[in-house]
Amino acid sequence: MDAVCFDMDGVVVDSEDYWHPYEREQLLPLVGLEDLDLDEITGMNYREIYDYLAETYEIEADRGEFLGWYEETATAIYGEEVALLADGDELLAELRERGVTVALVSSSPHDWIDVVLDRFGLDFDAVVSADAFDGPGKPEPGVYEHAAERIGVDPVETVAVEDSLHGIESAGRAGMHVVGFRHGAADETDRSGADYVADSPNDLREHLLARADGD
Image 1 (cartoon, rainbow, N blue to C red):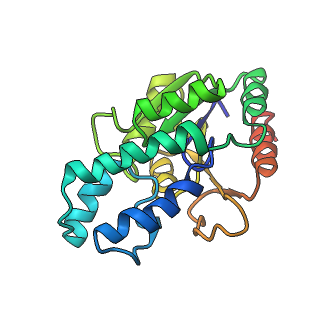
Image 2: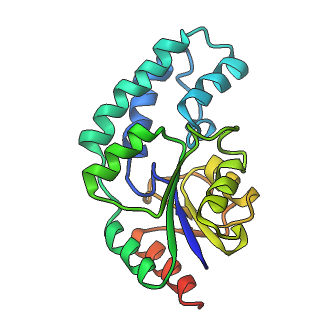
Image 3: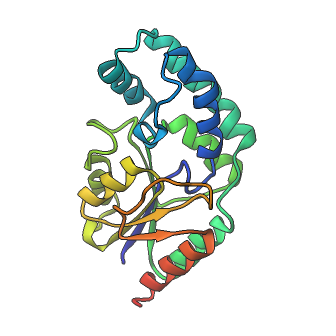
């Protein structure tokens, strides 16, 4: 294993624990989709979420207002509410000690990512935002292919840690070994498309360090 690419939302920070209730209680009722399965949009860039809902369900919400809701809500979620993955900074240090490159590959825009990096003092060898990537985001593989090229590794020798169906598909299509990270016992997302499912931060740590050590 030459590198690990971490998704941000739902992996590095527990933001999906906040996004999902906000989307369910505030956003989706405004567009008449109260019963939408959130797995349909989780992991996507928020601009592409609007495009997907407009095309699939013909929502009539104003695009500017829809995106503005995400931008306003993100300020509170990332600046005040999220918590870091348990011992996440120590995990990054342990991987680096083993010569593993660590990257952050997220569908969130750079200004949201920067809030998380600054708030928790995190440092990655590369930060790739699908929002700034010239191409379709997750579940398409391009953002992970771009990340591998950016850090100079073969995708086959790279592990991606993802929580969402779209993220798992994106990294898998790029040729990476995909770890599906589960938030907790109440998280029922089907991650069978991943090569390995980590049910806890400790499980994730053990799996990544074992691969780094060649086990």
